[in-house]
Image 1 (spheres, one colour):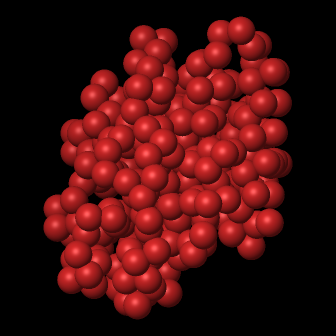
Image 2 (tube, rainbow, N blue to C red; image 1 turned 90 degrees about the vertical axis):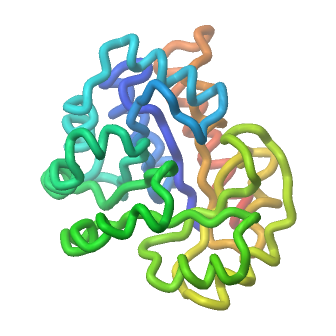
Length: 246
């Protein structure tokens, strides 16, 4: 059974909504939830997630909100915090490790923390029983892949193309996937540009997909009320889960 990872932006449109949406996604078959930490300069994210980040910050998002929401979410679904390195650096990785342990969160996805720069933090993260997710891009050489993946934990985040999330580009990833699987048995999940139209194709040869912009677009739709938004993202989750396992 291939896995579905879903990203939503914490605190948008509200913190209560985040909790309700997360629990609904768990019921809809989502295996892992990425709780996004709103940040003013989300360099890997496209305009959809960037807009949600900005709105959450304008609504007064604070890191404590992430910690509080996670306490209500993590007992019900495998949860990871996705954020940029700036907050981790300023608050201290030890603070995030302690808060993750307290709330039941299982690890971190930090897209702007390169492999080499992540190494000083990995021992403390892994000693706490958490994971710091490694990234592979289609531009990475076989030698680079061999360096990164052997010790990767939980899953490897395969970026579907060079660029930002939600751009909907397409690249042949089969050679990259084969290179990864030559060096590790850690599952490979593909992210960037995955939605109901692309999920089946993107899931070929990998163990799961990561979906963000397709959900956040719904959260940004002001023509829908909260109940309708949750119903729609649940429907999208079910459809993607079905397609990747068809």
